[in-house]
Amino acid sequence: MKTIRIFIGSSITDLELERFKLMSFIQGLNNKYHERGVFIEGYICEETPNTMRLGGSQEQHNDYISNESDLTVFMFFHKAGEFTLKELQLAREAFLRQGRPNVCVFFKAVNKAPDLNEDIQRAVRLVFEDYGHYYKVFEDVDTVKLEILQFLADLLPGKSELLVKDGAVFVNGEAVEGISAANVFAYRNNPDLARLKEKIDRLREQEVQAAGQGNESAALRFSKLRDDLEKEYHDLETGILDMLLFFHRENRKSGKSDPVLMEALRYLELGEIGMAKALIPQEELDRLAESLAGRRELAEAALREDSETLLARTRARVRTLEMDTGNPGRFEEIRHAYENTYETARSANGFSLLTDYVGFLYSRKDYAEAARVAKATDYLLMNPDLSFDDVYPRRDLLLDLMSMIYGCAGDPENEETVLLLNLEQRRLYFRKYPTPHNEYRVAELNRMLASFYLRQKRMEEAEQYHLETVEGYRRAAKTVDDPYRDMYENSLAIACSNTGLMYDMIGKPEEAERFLREALEVCRGPAERRSSPSDVSDLVMIVLNLYGLYADHGKTDAAETLLREALETVRRLGEKLGPDVCEPNEASLLYNMSLLFRESDPARAAECLREAAVLAGRRRGTDSTCAWICEQIEKA
Image (cartoon, rainbow, N blue to C red; front, side, top):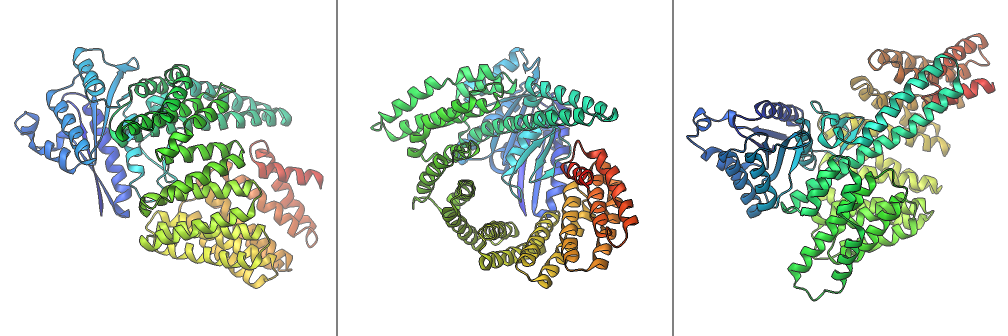
């Protein structure tokens, strides 16, 4: 059982409600992850003996903070009591001495800034000037919850991925209860988010109004405009989270703030991109990079400190530019920022910045330059002085990027080399740490290789890696704890379906049917238990793959039974999920049923087609499958 201990500190007479909300949130996380082998413990002063609240004993707090806690969160509002400031000092000294606990400091906002009373201003000066420590501002305690999630994300089982979308917060693909990004300071006060939300809501109203009036062309136009704005909205949500993660990691790295970045954070949290950019001008970064290039004779410690400053400020400027969506020249400015820091990053082993640069070049479709920077970064990672455990996560991400770069560049030889290299690395890591998650990661690489060989029409290798993918997912799904089993089973179902299609392609219908039927059986589990939109869509996709096999080989009765049972399942699940999810899937099944009966029972085919047309027509403007079905019906 892995234990993660979190200490929540504030004045006993201040922020009591916030402390208890945080404790409730931590308890909810513990309830979710305890069965997966992680115990998350929260600790506040109210849980200690009354004598402590009366000031009679502080030893228990001090010992817990210095020797047991992994994360300490300190909150201030109107008061900064002597005991709380002493606890903060102890936590900071322990972090500098032993690398833990991580220390997060928050001031509750009054008009978007810390209280102006003398007590709080003294605490701000202590944290920022004396300690040189990052601090953040909050209006709602959800801001603090997000910081806790950022800390936990790397320690919880799964993919260690934090995501914000439409105000919801997800960890490893699972929605987190008890938190809304809309309440988080940086989201709540971002003017661009508010502007986009208002436009999206207005377009949605116009789209519904146009559809109700039978004006399909106008509804489609409004739908397309809304889709474009929603993408911009989601990109901005991601940009804000990346910015918060950047500052969180800077804090965890050294616990010492850069005053320039501290001030930039203040402006970024308020959505004042121009002010943040002005604090990190590219000209100053250019001068610093030029100075470093000519000062290699500097003492190693001084050189390292200046290099880290340049790397951190560059990454902060890049994140600022990414959020500057109204700036048409931001991508060229981002490229310049990376190019300016490239040589320093190579000299200082700035792997994170280099990998970010590779990802940026890939996103801009500059595949040749992306491959060049990626290969140079990979060379650095091959340094024999670096441990395998330290290199693995960095190289795994880099090789993933490289395989995508070579795939998009039309370079199958290098794409294959990188995929095989990464597979061997993941196998080594799995042999060293044989967990279900690491086996799942090996299976994912086998899946990518199976897809690669299929595209290259190298069917012998495609068959080999399809089968290895299925076997890997099977083993991982059997051994993983709930609720990851649903995710693993869903991956197994898709892998079985792809294997079945591959066997159909090479003329082995019996093998194809065996794998497609296994896919259907496995997929029913997650669809019935979770009933998420993606689970239902995957189920229908697998049904249609098996239906196609039956129809092609004249198994009409089996095809009809399959479609009828799937239609009943989708309609039943629709009671939970609603029409937005299930009507497109129903329309797809009914349309294929009409094709099945077109010759044998024209009247029944016409009835299915009419039903499909009604369902698809309702969702034509919002669902691509429904739009396609409507087009096919109109052509017919």
